[in-house]
Length: 71
Image (tube, rainbow, N blue to C red):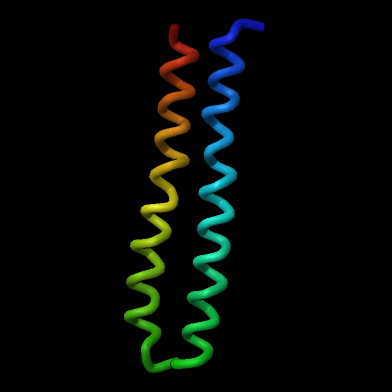
């Protein structure tokens, strides 16, 4: 196994952090809507923005893995 394959595997592990981050954010969003149902539109807007920011780390990790595998 070359070091490029190992590095690509490590780069893909960034998806774990994104999954945990989105899970926590979704839980807090549901909790906030449960407390104040009238603010659900605003809460969902911030949740979607936060989820997009969490996913960028996973996408960067995937791109880096593809770049490392392409060597």
